[in-house]
Image 1 (tube, one colour):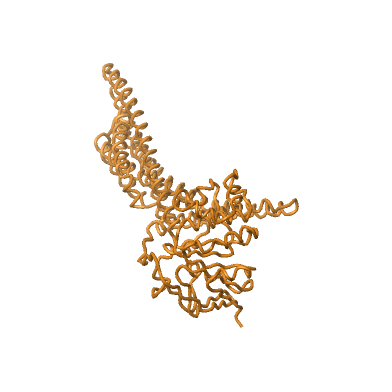
Image 2 (cartoon, one colour; image 1 turned 90 degrees about the horizontal axis):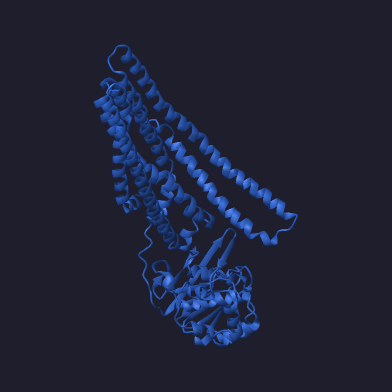
Length: 517
C-alpha cells in the first residue's frame, strides 16, 4: 500500500499540520479550567480566561472542519486510485491468473476489500500519527504544568500500553480475512441465485431461499467470530488505558493530601491524564485495526503489484500455426488432437462428435488450457513465448454482450471502429437493422447476440479468428449469407461447428477430432 500512501502524501502532511494545531488548541483549552480555579479571585484574569477560551474554541471548530475536509479528499484520492488500479490489474490478468478467484470474489475485492482498507488501514494509519502528536504535546504540557512524578508515571505506563494490541493482532487479522473471504463467496452465490430467477417455480423457490439463508448464516457466523475477538481487544486496550487513569487518581490524591500541588494543578492533572490516555487508547486501537487488514493487503498487493507486461514476443503476423501430438487430460478423459497446420489467411473447419475435445484446440490457442503433451507453434515460436492477445480474436458459443448500445458492444466502447460497415455487410441487412433498432442488446435472441459477438471479433482485426460453435443459435439464412462472404475476410479463421457438411467447400481443410481409442 506504500504506493497509494505516496499518492496522498500531501493530504497526509496537511492532516499532520491540522492535528498539530488542533492539539495545541486542545492543550490551551485543558489548561484554562485549572488556571481559572487558581486565579478565581482575580476578576481581570477571569475575564481574560473567558475571552481566550471563546476565541480558542472558535479557532478549534474551524480547525476541526478543515481537518475533516482534508480527510475526505485524502480518502477519495486513495480509494479511487486503488479501485482504478485493481480493476486494471484484474482485467490484464491472463485467463489462468483470472481464474484464481471467481467473479463474485473480484466484485467483493472491488467494493468490500478496498472499503475495508480505507476504513481500517488508511484512516487508522493517519490516526496513529495524530495520536503520536497528541501524546508528545500533552506529555510536554504535563511535565511543564503538572507535578513531574505524575507526568513520568503517566508517560511510562502509556508506553507499556502500546504493546497490548500485539496480543490479539495476528488472530484478528486471520479472522477478518476469513470473514471477507466468505463475503466474496456469498456475493458469487447470490449472483447465481438471482440468475436462476427465470427457471424457478413455487416449489423450487423456497428451496433456493433456504439455501441462501444458510449461506447468509455462514457469512454472519464468520463476522461474529471476528467481532467476538474484536470486542475482547477493545476491552483489553481500553482497560489498560483506564488503569493509567486510576494510577493518576491515586497519585493526585496523595499529592493533594501532602499539599504538594494546588487544586488547580490537580484539576489540570485530571484533565490532561484523561485526554492523554485518549490518544494512547486510539493508538492501541489503530495499531490493531491496521494489523487486522494485513491479509487483505497481501491479497490486494498480490494482484496490484504483479507485472503484467510479461516478456512475451508480440507478433504482428505469422505464416503457419502447428499442432504436434497435442494431448490434454481432464480427470479420466484424455483428449488427443490430430496434428494440424493452419496457414496464414486460410479458413479451417474442425468437426467431431460431442465431447471429443474440439473446443480444446481453440482454448489451447487462447492459453485457457496448457497441453499436457505435444507442442503448439506460431512459425518457430512456442505458444508460451508469444502474446496471443495480439494474434487471436475468440468467439465462444455463449455470446458475451453487455448492457449498452449496439455500437458500444461491437466496437467495445469505440476501441475498434474501422471497417464496421463492411463487417455488417457480411450478414443479412434486415438482421443488422433489427439489432440496431432494439431498445436493449440484452433482449436480443441468441442468434442475434451471436451476430453482435461475431461482428465485434471482426472489428478487432486480429490475424486469427477463433470461432467456437459461434453459429449454433443463428438461423440457416444468416449462416448461408455469412458463409458466402467468408472469402472476403482476409485473415486466418478456425471454426468449430456441428452440421456444417454443406459448407465444406468453403474451407481450405477440414480436421476431424475423434475420441481416443
